[in-house]
Length: 239
Image (cartoon, rainbow, N blue to C red; front, top):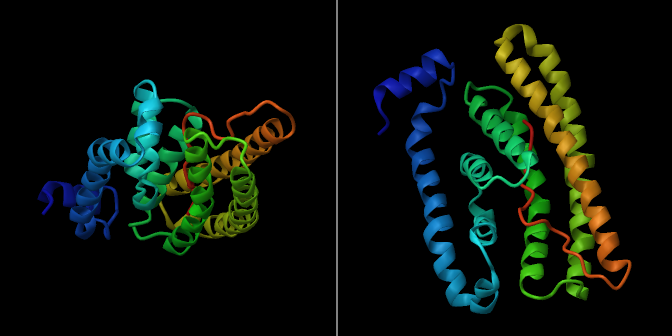
């Protein structure tokens, strides 16, 4: 059960009338993700991959490893806090904040049709995380990583840029048609987040291509994925 004052604040002040019944699930999910990140992931990593885990140096490197184990139970609130506390790049913070606002405000309810479809953008994150782990387990530049890199670029381009771009355009048209019937804060937040997340998708895709060229275009072995990971798509979906 959540405090009554919080239910009233969300439903009456913020207009998120459909969110209060789901708050207990939200609390449990956030607690579960945090437990996996801080407790379960370090323990399992030390047991199942002692060499790779032991080779990680510094708090940031081990945090990145543990955060990637949360892919299958990814949650944007957790992702936002993680991006801010363990700050590496402004793009990750923008992604987390934008997605948190978008999916929270959809409980008005508003544009839920687009929210569920944009979650498909995260398909590319499977291959992104595999690349990161291959780097950390001494498989950088291997044939397996090359194949996975091709799959990553294909899914990222087709799901996030082509399909995602189409969904973002349709959503923008829907937002323009409904802007008179929703608070200005919704129009501003959803419109700005839509542009920001699509911009991040193109930026991250260009970085992936550049990194693959450096790695497989010569003798020098470069890391495809930086020390932090790209979110969903979010990373990064817009509604």
